[in-house]
Image 1 (spheres, rainbow, N blue to C red):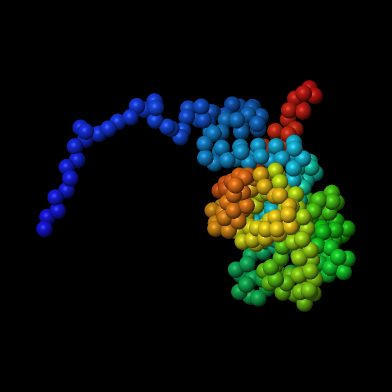
Image 2 (cartoon, rainbow, N blue to C red):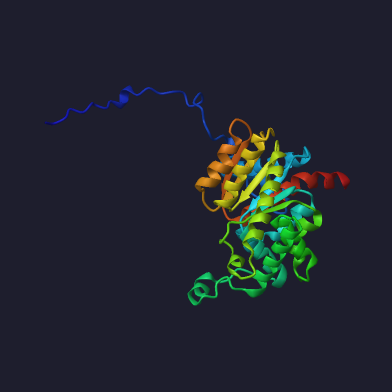
Length: 323
């Protein structure tokens, strides 16, 4: 049977006035061309007020407001941030008083130590895995495992243990070490290890009890930091599983203990949008109050942009007044 289809008569279309129709994009939100010799803040001001550019500005503004109001700013990151050369950016932010606490995964300790120790890191995994040499760097494992075991005896968390070890050691490049700088400035740094994920876990010098104890102390320290996060900002840079899960549990524990942790901003930066960072960092923690942002892009571009934007907003006006 042939189905009779309705006749489409476009002469009967109902229209609405364009000027009354709601519009998502306005001329006032368009970007503007770069002017040679303009400042970095001028460059930021030329960006469109739309989508990712609007979110970038909002993130910079949130961190600036948090600092001005003496609220907590936490930076969490996976090891990739250090591997792509951003440790000096984080160190500079710490030196300027723009970071109140750091949270990282265990691999971050490996790359931070190796760069401090010999100025290079990140082995070629494929060929090394083929011949059985992957992860078998002697000095890396011995230094990290010794630091963690000594820290356990001293009742420290893993972040403090490794940071103090690098700071006190004869490492020629420790001035660019995130962990050593945190130790020197007495900024809390927490390391959240998953047993078996990091190369030094394979070595005979590894002590599973020390790894567990120091990392658990850091979970408790992170919970203390999160308990004070009201009105602050938390960044998650490139951690797809470990930090989003640990942060969510720290937040749950802090709220369970009666701390009113709300009205804060969360920021996830990564190459793609992934499930756990999206729900455990951007969405669930900020339900009801606060705001979460997800910005997609390369760490080595986004992190310097955000850091520079915060510094410009906080410090450039004072410099202009001083002239």
